[in-house]
Image (cartoon, rainbow, N blue to C red; front, side):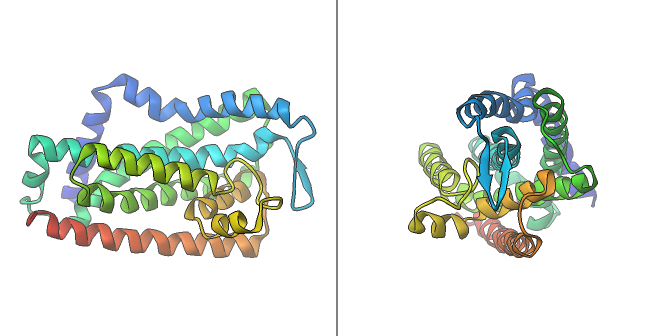
Length: 255
């Protein structure tokens, strides 16, 4: 446990050295909601119709913003491996008396706390400024959802961050993966009216699973049985990603 806390403290020190980075992590989701949400809310003045329910676009988009934010924090955290590898501290970490799992857990726990703060700010100001109706009794589920989502994407991206040796190649991979995953998902639009091939791709996309769970938790949209299946699928995705990340870390000292 002391090793996990030590890694968490290091993550805290790194984040607090740059107020710009901290501001980006905490307030960029709200900025996305205000910029895209307000603009598209005007464009969809009649609201978004899905599953027999009509919602304002702001209401529909809130879960998408939270899902994007979890992915964004995972990107920033996994990118830190490149900085650590360049200055040599990464390999020094691997010689410390801690397991690879403790190392990964320490890095992600702090960033999950950051995700919780970020989520509270986004939801609170989204409701206050945009009048988004929420499900207060499900806020605990929202926080659990963003924690698991942030962890799942971090473990997934960590495997690639450790296997890809060049910074520019990792940035290219991240941009392509984010673009494909984001637009082949339910972040920006409901899946009802999508072409069949794109709908199938979106339904097997972990970003869709995460977004749908958060949408159910925030505004009550979605069928409970479907959301439970998606939540279980994302849980499996997180555990498999963690296993691959630990295995990759175990071999990192040899490369």
